[in-house]
Amino acid sequence: MPHVVTQACCGDASCVYACPVNCIHPTPEEPDFGIAEMLYIDPATCVDCGACVSACPVGAIVPGHRLPAGQERFAEVNASQYRETVDGAARFPVDPARRLPLAPIDRPRQLAVEEKVSIGIVGSGPSAMYAADELLRHPQVSVTIYERLDRPFGLARFGVAPDHLHTRKVMRLFDDIARNPNLEILLDTEVGRDITLDDLRSRHQGVIWAGGAPTDKTLDLPGIGQAGVTSATSFVGWYNGHPDFTDLDVDLSTDRVVVVGNGNVALDVARILVADPAALVDTSISPAALAALKESSVREVVVLGRRGPAHAAFTLPELIGLVDSGVAVTVDPADLRSAQVDGELDATIRAKLDILAECAAAGEPEGRRIRLAFFCSPLEVSGEDGRATGVVVGRNRLTVDDAGVLTGIEPTGEITTLDAGLVLTSVGYRGVAVPGLPFDDATGVIPHRAGRVMDGEQPVPGVYVTGWIKRGPSGFIGTNKTDSAETVASLLADLETGALSDRLIDHGARVPAHHRARRFVRSSGRPRGGVA
Image (cartoon, rainbow, N blue to C red):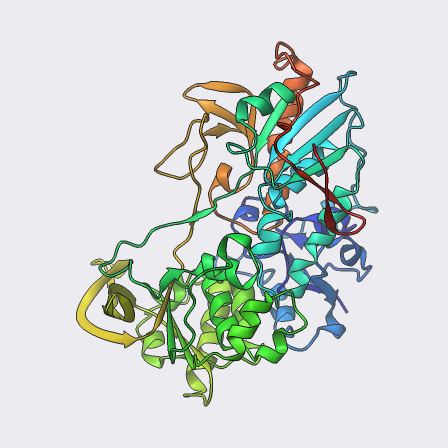
């Protein structure tokens, strides 16, 4: 039987290049790659060779006859992407002329630079590790990664839900990258506190900023500053043991939690809040968070979305993983009737609506549940004595023009209050300005061209950017692979053309002696103390 890509797909496209028959799409060269919710295998083209299974860093690809419980829907999800659409063409047509006898694996070309090259990378998340991997294909390149936390790998460690065990496997790949003797990871080292950007620029021919988008987009509502209101990303950090959030005020003595926003992070926190704590014992969840969840009084989590089901921010894989995990999910049938969708939806949105219709038809469940509420805008966080007690919600409806084309939403005037002792905002991540580098405050990114940091029309010599701080908080873990490859290609091109040759490098420069950085040692998986 053909192989199937399942929920854990990280989108790094290793499988694409391992496949000998070009049956996995979209590829990084195709326009849908940057926006697709996952990769898909064409069952009519797959020859069941298993090359993709070995290539996948997160174990997301399995033979169709071995799909694990809760992942069975993904056989249809994959196949549906290759059926004819309303315009008579398949979404990801497979050109027989492109089917190759062997996987197209090329050796990296030799770098046209003979001398030793030193590159610094700020941050150790997925974009940083993929950038390091690209650079270390060239033996004359050495890389030093500067990480402010006591453990590496960023959101792969602290942002992925602890029960998403397959997705967290990507850290094994990063461990393997860290084994390279030309790579050094310095932990507990914050740029701006322990070492300056100018220090890094004097120490390395090139510096790649891979600091991510470390803060949240703000939600400007009356009452938002009360106790009992926090961001979903902070909550994720709390249950994943992120050192910045160990003291987060999380009150689980309430019957109901409201999550504002309905992206994948919102579904993650909702699922963790109603999960059986016994099912989390063997995961990487923080012991303190697990203890709190065992004593939790939460019975319902309401996830609010301003628009209708067809425009929900969560992905189809995340929805399938939620609904088929055994968690009770309920949807108001009126929300589906109000969606006013036509028959020209693509396969992904249609599949989402079909699953939501199943949830609506199941009725009100007993016990803990997640309620996905659509057409709901938060208007105010109500409170008493400085602590949140609920969310005032306004009802929306779809608007259409004279031709019947959907134009947006508008309030109906109907207002209700959802009682809740904990409110989590989940409206997206945002990058922060880096002292000494240009910053686009409107988009929350560092301006760049193909990864080269730009100050107006001029590149900042020797400084590059990758990841969310480069493109904004979009895509998946594996999306950073192609993103980082672009940045590294620009850096190496600058090396070869001599654009970096006039930079004087102080090869003796060190992290200041008063700062005790810890080197990450891959063999034990734990950092070892030492002065860098």
